[in-house]
Length: 504
Image 1 (tube, one colour):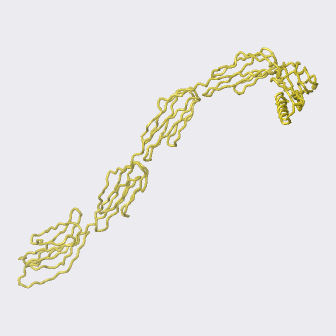
Image 2: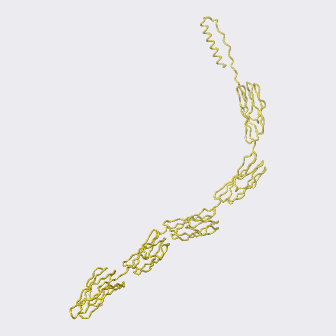
């Protein structure tokens, strides 16, 4: 019990006693004070140090503490043992013995002391085993792209081993004994266009592994030089030369079938590739890309731009022809920049060829004889691509001159003679005698012509010819007009017959 509680109780009993005395009225009834309650002693363990250090070789450390109870002690690690593990109250000193620490890290053991309801812990930390020796003078190297051998010197007091993480960096030895050592690292040529890195790792016992960094420079680019990287070519196509220089073997390719190369590979030096560009038959511009490669040099691209084909065209020397009645063969000459086809709309007008390719062509058109009495026309249609032209063949009709006349012996006194003429062209009339004159005519296609026959005062019969003709068309028709002589008397003796004459 705490002293304050004891004082409180004594005071309480005094007050109660005084109160009782006052109530009885006597001074001899003073109560006997109670016996004081002694406080209980608290359990304790007092340690001199709650943490201790031990060397890696293994040694003993002393643990000192005092307690008012019987006690026990225990260790959390088998490598740390205690000289005694229990005892009575009082001042105590025990020993903790550590075995050698052969690991590369420090270790900890916890000693727990219990006394009654109290426990205390003491932490013992043992040092790590000392590391083995591994010393390097240089841990990084820079090597040119061509490669080389480098020396890596180091010292160790134990056996060692080494390794490289890159195939292009090899070592002269990968293990050895203690002492001063040198490893030769062989770095092969770097053909890549970027820097590369290798790491060599050296290990020796418990020593911290050492890493050596090898930085190798990027390869220099090979040479590939072109004077011109773009060309423009007309639609008709052509050959062009692409000169270039390289210090290594090269190869070339085109991405278009219409653009072909004279060579696709070659050796170092001043070179030239011939590019054959075919004719562009489409109505739009087109491009081809030629790619040249030479070792590590940046690939070079040559652009070929070919102009669009010209719009489809037909060039005709003549577009119309006139042919006579008898017909004939005529020649049609034309030039086109596209495939063509040609046709006639009349069977009497035929062609020597119906289709063909671009270029200049001469075709024969056979025009048959016209046996009809009307002019006729044939239309020839020539198509090339999306354009067309027409050719007109005009043929003359068959010309006819037909004269109908009733042959009779005309009266001597004169008369009008009617002659019917059928003709599909103009014609002329001629007389071989002056006693007949033309009076009039009607219609061009079928004429009825009147001729006046004068009086014949001669007693002899006479005869005259009337000729109808067209010299240009080679037309001619002749009739005879007969007139009787003047009779000795006034009687007339008619006689005659009908004659139809046709020539053509």
